[in-house]
Length: 412
Image (tube, rainbow, N blue to C red):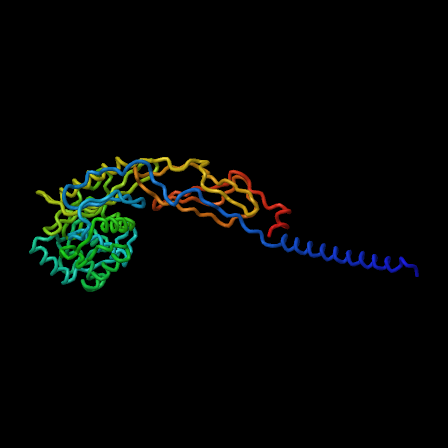
């Protein structure tokens, strides 16, 4: 064996060892690359560029509010147009019958055009009618033994203003005034009428109190029941013994007014809870308002006149405002591997409202894939205007390419 033979052996060992090391390194790199390649790819995220509300330009309209008493006015589903006078609870007289009808229709739903079950006139109803007649309260003439359908009883309550109809419906629904009043207050709680207290079903008791804002909310809820809206839109009704009775709401059918209920007594003054509808732009708007505590020679007439003036001014102040135009930047889709793609509104839209109105908006974006083509719908921008609101489709204005192979195997 020569002198150089051990050196040759050492070099061979080193070469083999280096080969092992290189092999191990290659295996490790392949394993690491494979792990990184097959790891789940994090999804792109959406970053909104639209605030949570839109305020229409200009200042809030100045409305011709009543000089005395209190009042409130809202556009159903859109928001409040304001209020005037005290916000403390006050007697509401016959407006309480709106809650009575609401509770009855909750317990005994009535399809539009249907008459409903027969309700007998009991001795309790007859006694109430006699007592209220003697004290010159509003009653519908009744006699023991006759029957009213549910629809006729509601007509007698809401159109003819009969306090005895409140007794008839109360006795039929629960069997006692106390139990029915408890239902009225439970319904008030569910509707969020935090400043309302009901002590009787007709409003004759001055302890039955509310605020204009609460009554507006109740009016909107009641008008959402088709049978209720059908009854309060009637200019006259024909009842079994009374014959034809005309609606005390003399504004009905004028200036878009479609109901709801008047009320008046010494404690409450003249009151009117009203709803009105008109088409503005492509939308049908429903105003719901109330006027409390009016005086004058005829307090009810004063309340009706005040309401009509408010309705005309409110509708004159509403119009369609441009809100978002097609191509308006709504946000961006941002990918962890670098690209950022603009997201825009697919169409233009307008908002029917009034100057200074603030409406809420919400973004609804689902799970995003790693690659998105141009023009793909990735979500919806909702403008809260009640039912129906406005939904704008959101789409990508450029394609989002998926991650490159280099990024996938080099990411941490």
